Image 1 (cartoon, rainbow, N blue to C red):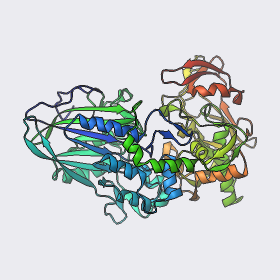
Image 2 (image 1 turned 60 degrees about the vertical axis):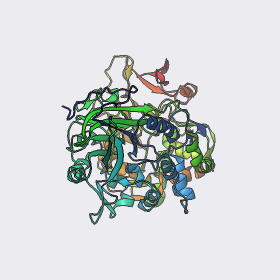
Image 3 (image 1 turned 180 degrees about the horizontal axis):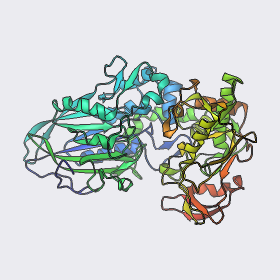
Length: 603
């Protein structure tokens, strides 16, 4: 049951709340997961984008501010990393006395406060501290501390804003802003954070700090760089925004991290979420997508005096098709031009096309390159102590990214932008020591992304909607088949060099620091080797010495299921690459509403 009464309708448009003589209207604008997508330009494909970017959000912010007398603009984290511009500034150009482009952009947009997400730490604490120091607004985080127990950032901040009620009476509204990040940052970025920072559970930190904040302010807004999942508390949960919303004293929640949109039909099945009202456990909430796809808007109606929330409206405004803000583009124009030049730097060549059009249904050279590069680097560093296997995954394979979100590199020259296209994140290289049984378990976890397929039924969806393709992380150097008819124990005929895999044998498995931390449900293991090379550096070394080629025959496949077929969605450009997967029985079925090309795969 809601903690508040609400006489407003949740909608994507409509009359703004106001007109009540004894009420105050506050508009909260929020961004999340911008990931350095400042300009409407895809540096990996060297072409403009028609959707997303903070430049488009800047235009939305201007419109939203014009509609309300009192607005605050907040960011929910993961702004610093995620595009070649982020890598260029961190690893190429450096700051060298210059303000970071994302800080310049956010200063220009007049943000009021922000929190940090997990990807803020990818470039190290010193670099992050320099960026935060150049911002003209405060950053907060309640559940990240230094090892001595002191706060890494202020736990909260209080913004005082003059407001007027419907009768024109002036009031000072004290707005408390508190922030949270996934506690898993200590695993994901262990190499740079261990011995320096510690984290606390999100909900536990809220219960500890919100009461004190509440005594200093009139309302509390939680910036939760955490997804929406589950009905109740789970200690150490990565996606804890729903449970956070139930903490007493929090008046509104901005969620993020999982790149979804709230309120939306995607959360219809979650009991604590009221999509029609825009609430989690009765608390107004919003999640504004990713890469500047949406601007989160929470309109609160407040009663002066006790400052109770008496009404609200929550929605996420799409930036799709909106012209980018020209002044914003001018602020970061030099950084954009430098990034374009940086992304063009030559690396080597490929003798075969590298794409991920069929990366969820068959081995592909683009994914094999990641595994081969990792295995070769591990072999060079560690020698012949144990057999070496490599992992590979398709980062860009549609899903939430849409029908253009696929790697598509023709045979020929390879530039730095292509390496970023193949491997989207600046993860560090890592090596794990795994038994044969653990290798088999790894493959089982990867194969779990597929739906269970009923034998004898045609055209069943192979994958759940918008499944994260980066969790389809297969270990190469083996041969096996995946039994889609089973819910568990799907890996069949697992062999190494033509012999059944010895479950007791030990292996060195080349992967990334991100996966070594157990992300995606993979069991975490202390790495035998962690860094200092990044995965992209490992790829570049491999391309320079061993240009990718079509390579060996497919090492994995689905078990045959006579009279059974599945469907999967890919890029419309895949129709021109069917010759690359001649072993698959594929039939194009047409274009979906979202613009994907749907195929039937006969099993």
